[in-house]
Amino acid sequence: GQQLNQSPQSMFIQEGEDVSMNCTSSSIFNTWLWYKQDPGEGPVLLIALYKAGELTSNGRLTAQFGITRKDSFLNISASIPSDVGIYFCAGCHAGGTSYGKLTFGQGTILTVHP
Amino acid sequence: EAQVTQNPRYLITVTGKKLTVTCSQNMNHEYMSWYRQDPGLGLRQIYYSMNVEVTDKGDVPEGYKVSRKEKRNFPLILESPSPNQTSLYFCASSRRTDVATNEKLFFGSGTQLSVL
Image (cartoon, rainbow over all chains, first blue to last red; front, side):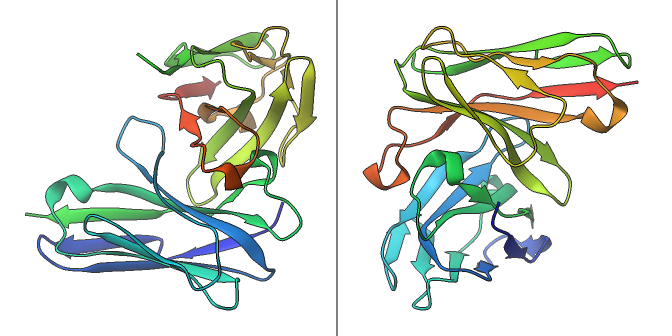
């Protein structure tokens, strides 16, 4: 499948700080999704993006679909301890929107110190 | 409660001993898939199914088999497990096959498999 590069691999932050992570691809993507995985659980969808330039918020979370269609970022504002987990980007490259063609990034492990 | 149920949650086995990880969803979803999660590699798709009797290989299908004889069940079969199949496995399902329909992909809670 298409390769997604997600960074950073891990983050250690203090409660209250803002967080930013991103995902890049060498090819054009037509859908970007951001998931969060709590310890011991499966990933849960946070935000879905379908158009280049789209900026979408979900509470303290904001994600954007890059204009070039080759990247996306996720911001978390005013982090709290329950933000701890692994964040994954995922996307479908141009030419397909089937879940069968969904590619995941390597994940960003977020640790929040109280 | 709408959910994707995987069993078992934890499994330790030995090389070569056939095993099956079950996956069941109660939401009448068309699409089901299996992923494995490994540190630094994220989630990689093993097999997926668009509907009953329709299955396709994902990115890492070698050493795995699946079947979709009923809409609700999608078992993952390891005919002859090897240590490199030690991993965390997730089953997932969605009402529709198209990401753009805004139908969410629901994940099970995972199966941690260790092959000795």
